[in-house]
Length: 247
Image (cartoon, rainbow, N blue to C red; front, side):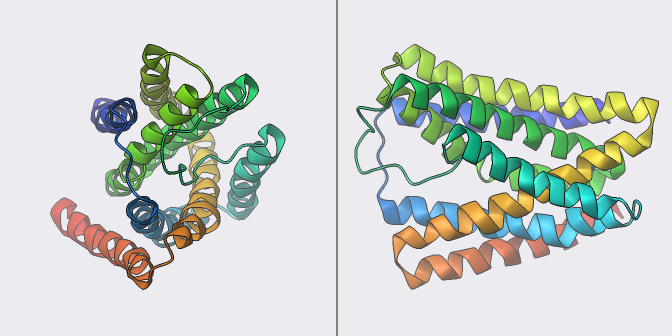
């Protein structure tokens, strides 16, 4: 099971590197295109949290709601302490005149977030393969934008092209590390992997409801609203298909 999870994690790592590579090619999508991508991904991630991760966590004990709330607050406090948003719409054109501190804070924040993504995938896989696959899909849908944004920020803060690409690589590597931890903890006590799943559920609620969906509104288009709903609906349909496939 661990090797399956790591294989899926490698796919998300490739998505991170792809996003960073696109940033280095100076591929500059419009705000509307980026907002649409974030909206669809936000709907998908929010559905993963509300339809799969939160219910699965609640089944694992009366203390789990506390950890779900803690996961939500963890990302909120991380953003406030580092004074950086983990996901935001890049400006038209490459960012410039960003401070070195902003680049470092963004690097730490993005790596922390992707580490939690890895924990979510690993904890989901420990709990149930079907849940792990659904979490993987939710993670995958926002890793290309994450890679793109972190590379753009690093370049805007004066880092070299190689350093910007390595920032994207670091997101993939820390995700793989995060995936392995629930398997190690689960071998000791399944309560620990249950706690990680609940924490990850809270972070996914924050990511979808507080970051991605609201930020997609910058596209100022009714089509983007439909993309949010579409992302939610496609997750629901995907979960049904995965359930039928895995029996």
